[in-house]
Length: 166
Image (tube, rainbow, N blue to C red; front, side, top):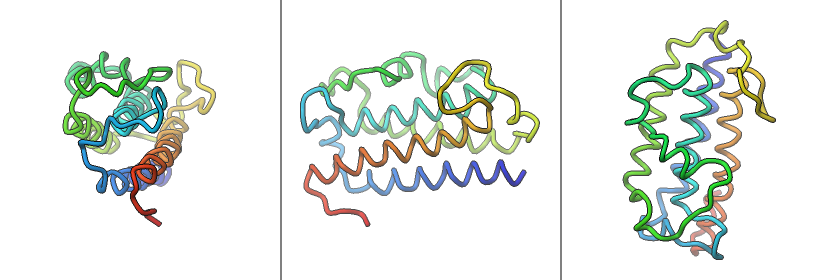
């Protein structure tokens, strides 16, 4: 149980960094890009919601009934690996909807984590991924992945004129 608590703590700490960065960014600026095709806050946040769904729920227990309302397949595709950030807000969910998805996936992860066992998480991932081989390692990668994207959010914030957080 200690390893499971450690993984959850890492995921929560990474999310706290992300939310602290987001707190100062006006939702009206979520689709701004420093250069066309690079990225924007909305894509980063939606990508984190999609990734946490896949890493903490999809990898650990597989897709379940009801997941479509939590983080739809269309959402996962739109913000998945190799997707291209679209700066046109008319083509995507609002910042509030993206944030709700991010928060809902975190809540579901925390709720389901109380049922995880060491045995379950030691099982190998049944796909291939360059950063993990077991379900437990997928949880650790979730936190690491989020920190990588938090760095990108931090840079976007700075380019918008905000002071550094730390």
